[in-house]
Image (cartoon, rainbow, N blue to C red; front, side, top):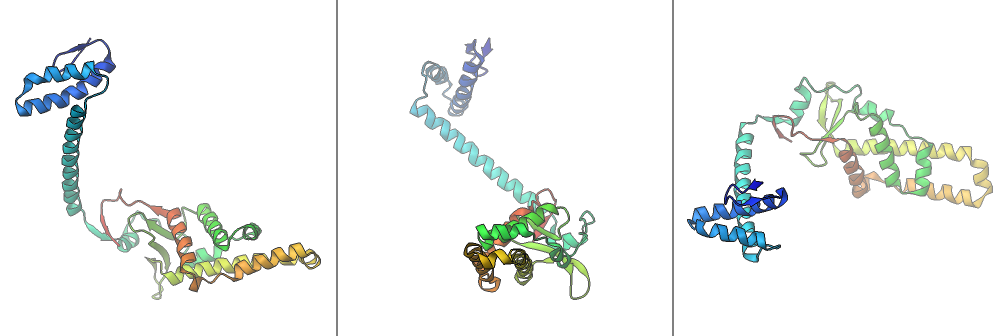
Length: 262
């Protein structure tokens, strides 16, 4: 047997007892506060003999839940304020450059650009898709192959901001914020490698291209796609690639006990 701790009503089935207790607890709490406990038994009985709660009961339940929810949100908000106040404010670049737990990348950003791999597969993708999707594929492939060692970092707390490990003008190698012109330089480097692969494909298939109109047309269209790309005047294109890279590498700083400044 299962007894309700509020009204002492007995049940043989645990599921019926559980449903009853949920409602009885709310009603009991409400009636105790209003000093009208005599109606509790009637209300409990009403809920047990009716398959669907009345609108009045549902209203009381929602009202109680709303009050509890508001109270919990206020408590969480207050707790968050206290936690934030107690956390040491740290500049993210200072943290990247001084935290002993930060692994120093094996390559600088400049060196990483040189090692980006572009194969004949990129040419085939370009033939069947856009220049944007081709570059995104190359970026994704290279990042996923070297995800633990790439000299680029990003964090969920700062949307689309990235940091690179590179040699500064002062000849000191350290972390710094990735500037738009540096990102465009990387894209130009990838673009150049795609062009090189396309030229290689042309040289391999030159005889067939010169003989057949179909293959010649494919080459012309592919070359046009590639040469139409201008990163300096295509902010939307650059932004889409940047966002994709950011989403690939971003990590969450919530586990770090600092209040970061970006």
